[in-house]
Length: 95
Image 1 (tube, rainbow, N blue to C red):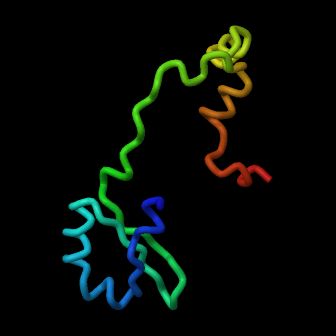
Image 2: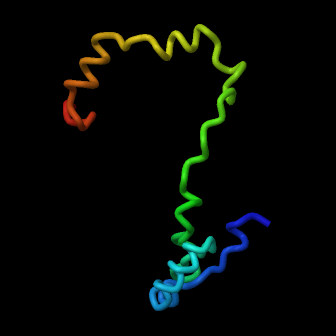
């Protein structure tokens, strides 16, 4: 059984009334689904669940060819770099 199916679902009013207790439980590793009108809307989980997984070297071995690596590392063309650095923040603004 995965962690999400093991989580208890509470309605919003119950979660509001028990928020301090729920936060304490989350800090101990327990997660909760918070629902509004019976529809799951949010998840309260321990911070450890949100930490990114460490990068495992060799993950892309055999996927990245030498040509692809050179293309990734190549400098951007001047016109594209200029547009990125000096262009409008809103792409629709110039229309």
